[in-house]
Length: 102
Image 1 (cartoon, helix red, strand yellow):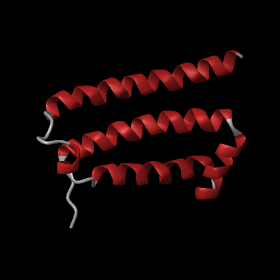
Image 2: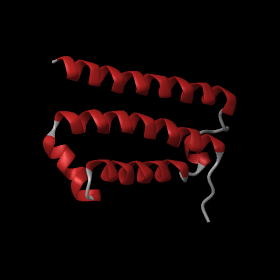
Image 3: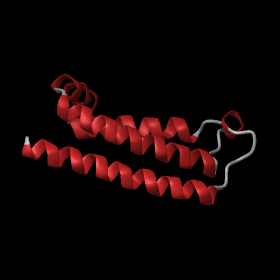
Image 4: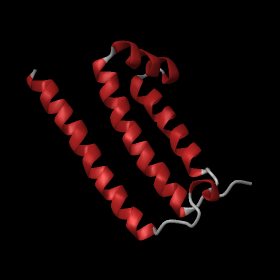
């Protein structure tokens, strides 16, 4: 049975946050992309959530030894998660501010 490790969980979190930003902005800029997510889940946000859960699960269960020779320091990568989280928020916030005024 596959097991997750803290380092792969952190990687999954980072990849999922970046995917959230990319998907959110792409859906707002392209109706065909939004329609793909509607097809997946009935509503574009439900479809997005389904895709993001799949992305998170895939990256969580990657065997740790395939990623690193020795596991990274969790404390350091926790800071990376916080920075990516802040940058993700800023990217979506600024996109919608610019979108509102144009």
